[in-house]
Image (cartoon, rainbow, N blue to C red; front, side, top):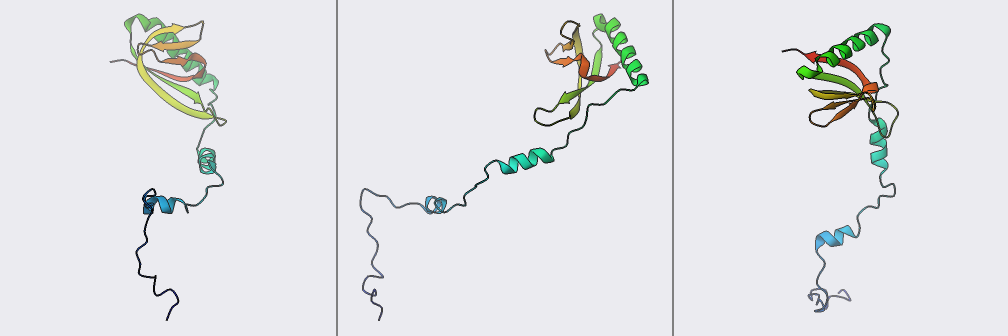
Length: 135
């Protein structure tokens, strides 16, 4: 005979002021502790690929200047243009190339940026390619 056999089958009485804890809440008490909070995000950020800003050779720079002059002359016609530009990464060295297609409203030479009709701006110094979409 077990010394607790007389009480082993008795239902546990919960005092009226305490509700029984759900299994989910009870399991949360024993959840693993994350001592390195955010470490996974830092590792993922370091693994993210960034590329260096492309350096234009003389031929590419002349081609870019020619495309810029053509766009500047045709600006009153509001041609559709695709700008390829470099976006610097906020957290790491390097960045990525992006394309913006739209109609340029203004080339602001004071602030050195292209201003599109949708109010997005692209810095002049970050542009590595200009393609006029002649249709």
